[in-house]
Amino acid sequence: MYQISAKSIITAQNGINIYRGATDSCIVSRVRAKGARIENPDEMGIKMDAPLLISQELKKKRSRGIIYTGLSDPYNALEEEYLIMRKCLMAIARFDFGIEITTSNPLILRDKDVLLDIAGHTKCVIRVMIPTLDEKKYALIEGKDKKLQDVLKILEGFKETEADMILDVFPMLPHINGDISSLENLLKLGKEYGVKAIDTHDFKTVLQSGMKEYFYQELEKRDKDIYEIYVKEGLKDSFVLDKSGEMGHLYMDFCRENGILFGSKDIQAYARKYENHTEGVQLSLFDLT
Image 1 (tube, rainbow, N blue to C red):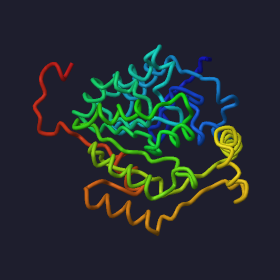
Image 2 (image 1 turned 45 degrees about the horizontal axis):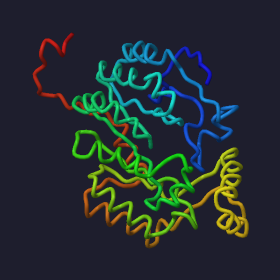
Image 3 (image 1 turned 90 degrees about the vertical axis):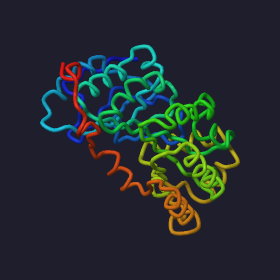
């Protein structure tokens, strides 16, 4: 672990990166892309002064908006110890900004009180990453240290609350989880837990330089047979499933029938649009202090 010295914490697009590095062993890791400019992704960096910086920067903003987390999952072993994300959430709540968090770690449930406080004022969006409900395939994609049942606890914990849950179906990989049966099970899961949206990332997985090397190295270690299939088909740097075929129609028809938002662009537009949930609500003196 190393500390990162930063002069600012919020990007021009309202993104924040409190931690730097790979927080898990997912076989498709954007943190490992050379474009992420992380020399050693396996070593975690932390911005200890992030809560102070975010408070200073939110105070200066002329209009409210949605703050969203970046490449590294903010809920990880360092967060469990230092509570940096929790302190940042408290600042976000205090200045009446919204939040969009992408995670697969049930540690987020620790901060349920702050997140629901944000949801009471504006938008609180929680993207839960679940690529498959098959435990063997889940271990192949996410690594043996992460348990599917632990991730499902997030959906259970925020079910029927004011928080908007997005089921993030990523990555979708041929010969692993890129099939209609896997998708159908995830769609039913989303309906069961009342998610706001289901994002398949347009059935596309892109392996940037750095990501590609790690993907194939890990795939060979984790499942030699599937790796050999990929070798025979050519070691591609992107996979696009049949968006316009049976899978795509199942996805769109299911979401329409059940009032679930779909399509990556529409989902992102919704998640990043600020809403005021307190219009017409009389504030007390405590709210004004």
